[in-house]
Image 1 (cartoon, rainbow, N blue to C red):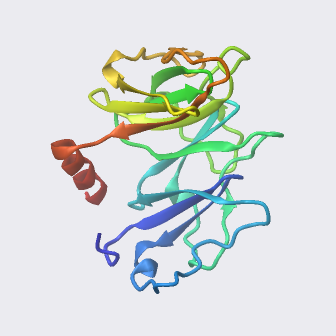
Image 2: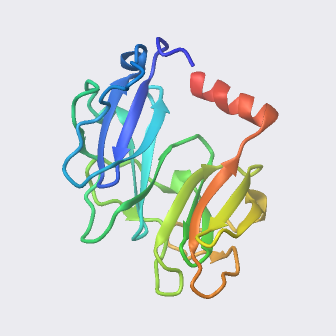
Length: 217
């Protein structure tokens, strides 16, 4: 990718800080690297999104909360600078996902005990950066905490992987579309003691070209 192209690297930490840095600031990286984020003690960089300057960002927490806000509300800072508050996290809560919103797409949310659901992104109203967010899954003892979330489209395919190394393929078209506050349906039968570790989209061939073109447009 051309690092002189317009756009930003939008960086989000595990404890909910965010900043944008112009893509051009990463054009001349040394082989031993350069500082990209001045982290607070005990925090870690979790996600880096390539944004256009006109995108919305959506964050999801393990307690089942989500916040959507425009990237224009995030200051543009130098590589060496720290971030600002993206979301106010409750006690013992933490971020599990950060996504760039795509028009007419869905948000897939998956819990540690194998429950999942898809909700149209239009159900997530735009808020101001730094708030507590709104519910995106009804987290219960049955579902367990949220462990992953992805922006997906109806023709996408997915891979779900468990902590014990079991993997299954899913189609978004086969998943139930529900409101924000539902707990979802069982996506995978887990062995005792196993939990969902991650889920990812499979983007191949023509679909990959379309995604890349959309990011550049």
